[in-house]
Length: 444
Image (tube, rainbow, N blue to C red; front, side, top):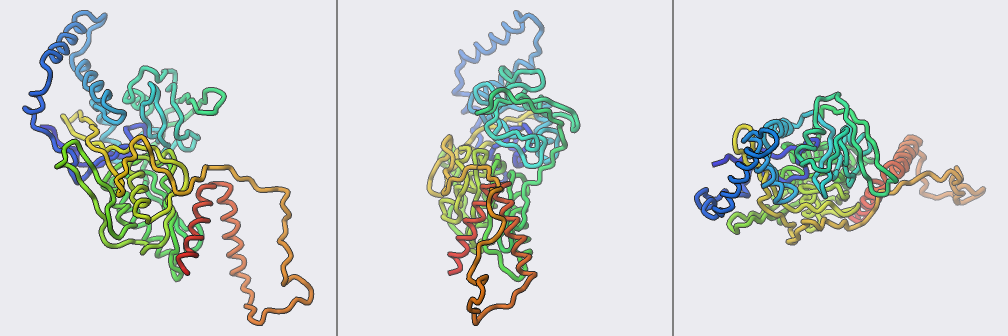
């Protein structure tokens, strides 16, 4: 009987990303082999053997038996859905390397659509992200090889390679006047899935770019770090950025959700057999103690990222801002066949606390904000409007405070940073503005 690979599916450049996999809980229970084989149509199996013999005898060139069988298995899995797959040889070795979180590649999460490779999202700080490849792009050519006719695994294999080696991607983008050419250099991709910083005093920011083995623990540590960095002024709120997050390990998504929830369901996983269904609930203890949270999502937010977004939205713990998410509502299980092969099989669907399936639907944000480009108005007057205090002979406020120039300078720097944020990341700027408003309401 095949062994379950008890590790999360790491998010690798060009490997099968956007996948939600179980780590410590077995969502999929394997059926007994005799029962499964007993339902197989004997006539069709005989036809399969006959076709193999015909190919071996009549094909223009000699064909290896193992290649025929591997290709048959690959087609069998690929025909189920876009996320099920058979991995063998170099492909499986590459997959196992990606699990370790370090590999040579471009840093993009992809899937096959209409015979082309569609970009789900680029991974932060990778060659693909730095070059400007965007969610929704279609890769039509890899170097001089057209993608049409390639399997996803073949396309992925061509995009991976030795760090420093060059590759040219031809991309079709909606709205572009023609094909876009990207000259890229492969890099050693190291996945740092969680980063944090203060947007301004008392308002934190956490970016989760993917869900790998340590995302949950890292998220908790970054929250604690933000709370500590706030020093004598307590944290008033948090922006959780999961834009272009292609997903990853199911248990890590549950842990991230649990860190911000005090009770109630997080997600339910439903398999074909009712006795394999599971529901995961939050434990007592919200790391932010109920402080307001804004979650940023977009069309590149998929799978595990959608689990977190759906849980926080249904539990009314956070406000979702941005654009509709990708809409992947299935769970995959990795099962090893041999030391050199495994299958990735879709074994369940997941549902949000309210019972919603987001499969092929996505999650709608509470506040829709598109990634607009804001520019500074060069014609705006470069001076402040006259106030009462500027008028000659104006009455003095009897409770007038002493002017602290250091505080004035510090606030000026904060205001400048916020204005810069409006031009560099409009969605994040809007999230911060909304978060500050919620913090004011919460303090009353």
